[in-house]
Length: 583
Image (tube, rainbow, N blue to C red; front, side):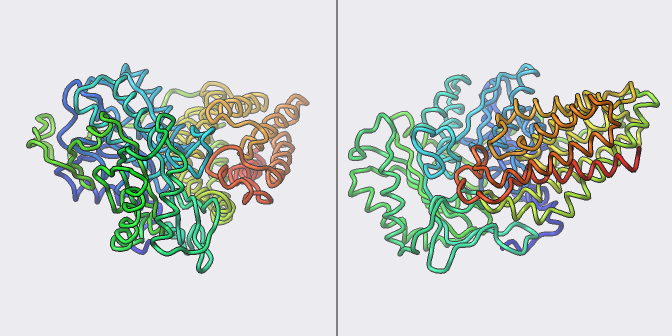
């Protein structure tokens, strides 16, 4: 378990601060993550990677020449926010465009996609690529739904090495696509990981058993088998991967492969070497030529006891890129010429870099009526933070049934930050719309992950609908909730029946609209809609998930409500209490 921490909520930020202080030769801190200390050469494509904390050396440890130009780092097991990614990419960009790369998780897809849109609006040519190498999380016919695990490394490296050669953005993207299409991973685990501040692991494995087909966010395996010997584990990993070859590889014999045997956090290096000796022999028996193998901790999951095997099937071009030199804090290969210092940063101290004197905070002008409405908005956000805090452990337990168990923690971070930002804006005289949009940005930034993106969207939609000029009536609030419902569906792609928060948000919005159409006061209309939301959340227990991290473990979730749906229902009821108090 994770023993050394201060405030668990500050763990990711403090870990990144310490990492940057320890590795000034390679990286410098920027808002949201780190970039190369030497900068990106003028005109070169900037490869910016990222994901949640808890996976070191992914992602910050892979920043340096020959690999990533920058890394956006989110909270524990939560994607960085779009604003964090945008910040890192802007710092790394040097005129050649940006390729954003990440593992294929819903939160990362949402936030990196939003960041790409913001960069494009800034005039920065941007492309995105999600690594999807975990064969246990979806079949070959649904390979686009697969998770990204330790296959991140060879795909990141191929793209970054191509960028180092001066290739234009579209060609760097094609290299990433080629490497991704030829990379497969599979893993096993013997125990789950324990997050900072938690008193129990995200999942457990029975004595003398192992979980098969694990993720890297503490998700349980797809199945269980008897605990193997090292040689049996090697055989399972190799044989499973050899059953699924890339479309243009008919037979493993005569093929070359980059091989990664990855430790997930608490399997010792000596154990990995015992397993690798058999992996190498089995691949050799199959006629596979191993190219520059890597054995060690490369994509971890805190203290998870587990291993994964990755094969990237090489052609001449991919082999060249895999063998290319790299120099990062956690991954080094070959030799590079001495780095040219970045003249723009050479004189800056680490503490001074990326630090501008902040302008005095200002808020848009607002009417007295909107500022009075902001009082109610602030009370509602306070109620949200309090109900989330009270139920955080319960939300985590629900989420851990088929997911990674971090929903409660993420919601705590987001709701607390949203209330704090709202209070700051309110103190400056902001109207209801600005209070909500400031809260939206803070929630997305601090929570990260899917819930951060979606709750940021909900609050921003409400803020846009309420504005800062008029006193919002019940119909205007219902209009904002309806737009939030539509925006969440557009952004996340989920619909009613997928076992997500949408199963609550849609009926809640419909019920609120119907109640306000009857000219009910807002508190009464909200009460009716909150009752609908509670029933809808309970109904998700009978659904099988079709999206998100719970999808690979669909059967396990049957009989348990969706965590996001349940938290939304709790929030709607808490907000009703605030509306009554400010009636």
